[in-house]
Length: 201
Image: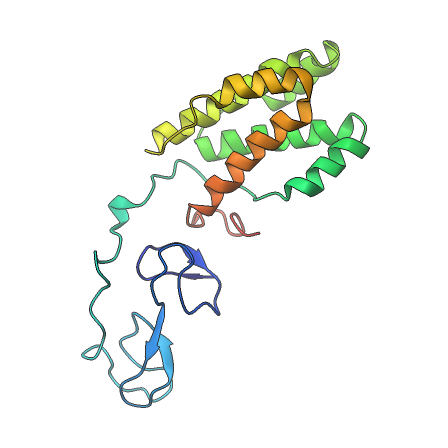
């Protein structure tokens, strides 16, 4: 992965345009015509100074660090929802339990503090024969909205209630909704410098 010089998001090394801001991340060297990094000052092919010939910033200019979404903690893992649905369906009670625990851990990690207690939630989930899951779906969605607010984002205010209602009838759908919100959020964040590997697919 490499960093887009315009919006500072993480993009594939071979990318020529940023998939987030759609700006070019490579340009032609004015001396040897080889493709070089957009913000390069020395050509890696001919070693010539290319700073003078650097193109002006695109319309609107690069995104200043202060304009990037605030990040409270490390970016979590983008999970394949279909894979986890299958794990939950065929993993008896263990599959859903692992999935819930991981989502709770992501909420705490990315939220910068302990917001939920996934271990206790799983114990109560088993002791109440699944009824505690309704609270878990509501609580996790609500805490996720709290993280989005603190980061300056736009939370889905209806998410906790929808997860509560849907979770009463089809619990796995509530889990899918929360995981999908997390996956979309990870895509909008650059990788956290203190957590190598987070945010990669």
